[in-house]
Amino acid sequence: MKRITALLEALGSALLLAGKAFVSLPAAPRILKRVSEQGYLVGYTTLPIVAILCFFIGAVLALQAGITLRDFGAKQLIGTLVGESMARELGPVMVAILLAGRVGSAVTAELASMKVSGEIDALVTMNIPPARLLVLPRLLAVLLVMPLLTMMGNIIGWFGGAIVSAQVKMIGVPTEMYFQNLKQYLSVGDVMDGLIKAEIFGFVIMLIACTTGLRTRGGPREIGFAVTKSVVYSLIAILTLDYFITKALS
Amino acid sequence: MTNAQMSARVGLFFILGVALIWVTFEALTSGQVRRDRGYRLIAHFTNLKELKAGDEVRMAGVKVGTIAETRLASRQAEAVLLINPKVQIAQDSVATIAMAGLLGANYVSLDMGTVGSGFLQPENQIRTVDTPDLNAIVSQIGEIGKKIDGALSQFTGALNGGGKDGPGLLSKLDKLVDENSARIGQITSDLRDITNKVNTGQGTLGKLVNDTAAYDSLVAALGDIRGAATDAKTFITNTQGIIDQVKSGKGTLGTLIYDEEAARNIKVVSNNLRILSEKLTTGEGTLGKLINDDSLFKEAQGVMRKVDRAVDGLSDQGPITAVGVVAGALF
Image (tube, rainbow over all chains, first blue to last red):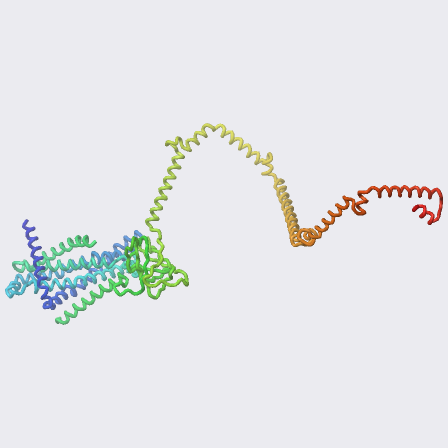
């Protein structure tokens, strides 16, 4: 019961924080510099790890599926399989998991540290809402950057699959055929579904990270706990929401 | 890192991301994000099958456009074809939905049409022909299978019997063989004897089969028949020549049949003969009287009698002068 109450309290805090942040939306032009900083953190610095992960996800997908499809005499469909999988599911989910691990943890740690050291209280005292100064830039940044990051991840994953399909002799699907097949069956709607999913994931991850950080109480030890809690909650939220969003979009 | 450098990197990331999204959408929609390039033709089909926007339009296997849109229009499916402006489609060109593979990829295939029939203009309707759906073909094959199955069941039933129609064909055959086994044995034995005789050259059939003389006679007869046929051919050819000559009015017969002058002459001769005959009958003229009047005969008879007597007198009187003979005969 206590846990459920705590979960509901966390959920309510998160929603209130999001509400407070978006109420401050008219002040967005004044915080553009902060949005840019967060965009750099969320997008630019995350891109290399996203590229590496998505490339190998695409490659492994092509390798596994290619051998199975070859046995069924349908290896020419590998482009569709990798393309659809990356665009609709693996691209958004993998980028979201990376975001939760890399950016969400950092945000939670930063805000928890500020909370523990009393900086948040100082801001409140100065009548500067933390939701406007700390949360809104991060939410805007993640909403702007997440689709771009996911699209890059998708394309890198497609190329990873194409290289494996062409270079692994057991599969041997030429790159041209791979992309022709991908193009034939993949629609804009599929890609859009993936980007919508990524947008929701990014927003939820950042909200969980900010809420967890701002709700931290205690000392440095609690900062570590808050980071762990933030990442775990984010991963659970990603996988749970993934099911419902997929169902809603299909 | 300065603030400016950080902003530049964020800007670079943003531009790169937007560019990648644009390129992806462009590729997946076959350029439909841009303004439509080409002219539109409307094609009505009963069923578009797996055809969707972005699929290819091909003419003789060469891509000439794409499907811009698919929609329903007055109880029919309608596909809007976006044709490359460099390609002109003949007015009697026919569009069909073709399958690019067994897994459902479709495209619209256009035929060349005829030269000089004019070209379709933008927004014109192109003629279409609905091709059989794979599902329909499979369904038909299923129905054929059911019919074959039914026919085989009936055939098997007829063979085996057991139903309301009584014992089957095989049962009846079995019974027939059982009941007539002695006769069948006898017939078999007789047949064996006959074949043995034929093999050993006994009887007419055996000689016919084994003796080469029959064959030689047959060959000779055939030679005779062939000769007769040659003669008949010659005869027919000659007859044909005669008929041709007659038809062309040559020769007596030809003249008689085809020459109008000759016909008129014959008619005149016939008429004259009829008149002559009538005169002869009625005893007109010298000849008529000669035939009908016997007085001349009697006179001639009397003259002959007198001559006879005169001759007798001459033999009695001896030699006389020539003047005396003539005078005696006349008086």
